[in-house]
Amino acid sequence: MSQLPKPDTDALRSKYPDVFDRPASARLAMPAMILAVFAIFVFGLVDLGFSPAKLMSGLSQLGWITVMMIPPDPGSSLPAYLAALGETLSIAVLGTTIAAILALPVSLLAARNIIPSQLLRFPVRRFLDSIRGVDTLIWALVWINVVGLGPFAGVLAIAVADFGAFGKLFSEAIEAADGKQVEGIRASGGNALHEIRFGLMPQVLPVIAGQVLYFIESNTRSATIIGIVGAGGIGLQLAEQIRVLEWQKVSFLILMILVAVAAIDWISGKLRFAIIGQRAVA
Image 1: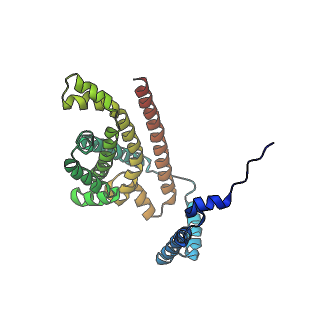
Image 2: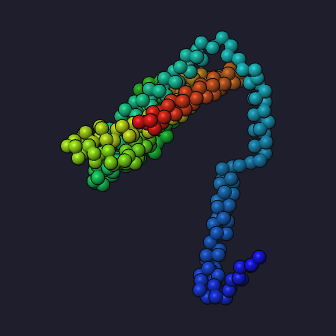
Image 3: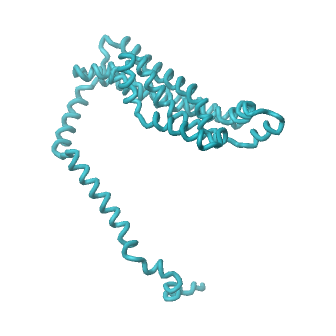
């Protein structure tokens, strides 16, 4: 069996000097970067007061709380908890739906293939970025001070936060749409509205529907969190039971949330696959 000839190292070194004789700055760049990241990590631990003793003490406290949670027991509050869970689901669905309805027309203004002018598209994109940059919990605190405690503030918080996210996602889906259908509508004498209605929307609506379904699932968890700060729903019940140290009720509420999220995940997954299947058939 023949062997490959040995490479001429000297010839290769003379031909590619940058590979064999790398400058010291290039050789030290990666170790210096790793060292800098490690130093920042250590500084962060020290600056934030990380303490192994506190961690071990906290773990023992967590173990005690876990024992106190067993068995989960709603007591006589099951009807109130079910109503609160329904309120949380309503907050998630209404907030997500309102955000999607409002974001769809705005996303058209942020899409490059709809608004070619950067001068007109830029402020719309920055507006969506500024809204999306504020977390849902912050919006909940803002709306609680505007409209008061309750689920209405939660719906507004999710709607505003998702409006920015949907605007970006929808505009990207519109930009990724196939332009051949739009060209066909234009060639047959259609105007700009016809191009959007019959050329773009049939392509992007299945994608948009899948994104909305995913956000409904995600916002169920968000609605629980914002409920803790007073936006209604099961999060408010959870915060109240933690405050009075009713750990068995806390564990029952957590189980309710987990079951609800799992059920919504299963349902939304089935709907997304159904939408994708219909799109493939079409």
